[in-house]
Amino acid sequence: KQEVTQIPAALSVPEGENLVLNCSFTDSAIYNLQWFRQDPGKGLTSLLLIQSSQREQTSGRLNASLDKSSGRSTLYIAASQPGDSATYLCAPRNAGNMLTFGGGTRLMVKP
Amino acid sequence: DAGVIQSPRHEVTEMGQEVTLRCKPISGHNSLFWYRQTMMRGLELLIYFNNNVPIDDSGMPEDRFSAKMPNASFSTLKIQPSEPRDSAVYFCAQGGNSYNEQFFGPGTRLTVL
Image (cartoon, rainbow over all chains, first blue to last red; front, side):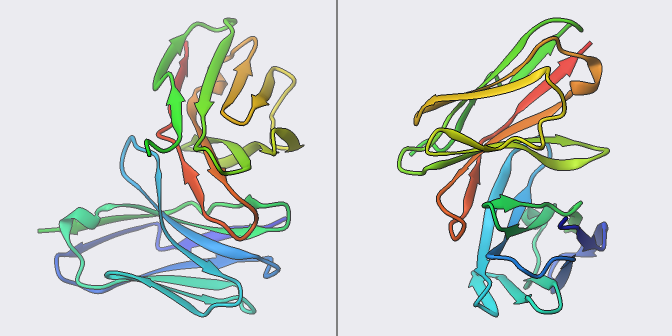
């Protein structure tokens, strides 16, 4: 059974810092991995999808990397802004088209 | 494109009542997922459908929970009878095959008193 761990659980930084959020998973037989953002009381917004054959995927100030063999992914946020404050969730997808979610990293970016 | 639509957005009910949550997925995607989110257990997959057929319902907690997808544009999750421990946010999500993104609806916040 896939288990997903996200570190740190919470992070508070001043505006402008570059951040790294970590995700580790136990079963490396994945199709892909998706990073989501969740604002308080809201649904999940898909940020990046990185396929198992890819090493990196970029969207604006966000960059996700994937090391499938070691069961790790990182989400890099450049030049953080207060609007980036949210919970970030990673979810690898295994056979059967099913996502397994980590507990998330709660990010607060202070002005 | 309005995205995945869920209704109601909030539901407050009393223990023992029947609750029906609704999802209207985006057209053109053939997989639909129901998730539950709680503080204690995070996000859990309850059931997923492919081409309107239930594929995996191993996450459905008890017989009190049932889900249907009568056609490609509508799905329901029913809890009967509801219990206070069912209080959670229930999300409907949609995707294509295993290589596609999943897109989430805004969720239904359920409170069972």
